[in-house]
Image 1: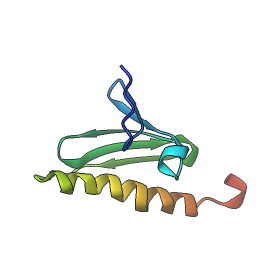
Image 2: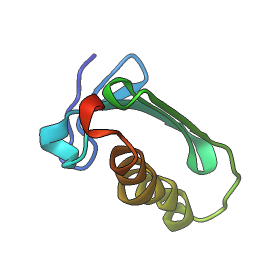
Image 3: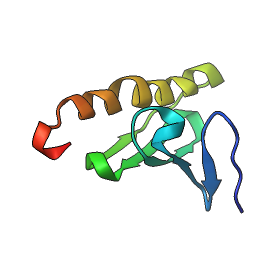
Length: 85
């Protein structure tokens, strides 16, 4: 099964694929579960992030995605040495 909604990128086998052209940061794969739990893998950044939490409101769950794409991924990219970029 493949599905590509405009907000997340491609989807298949319970994983989302977000290419750099889609998220403006880097190519990554992520899964998210109930309550804002996330697992993100960004191979080029050598980055794996797990967010475990329990929230009761949908807007609070979306905060996990914002944390990843607006703070954690940019911070990991800023910490790369020029020779590694």
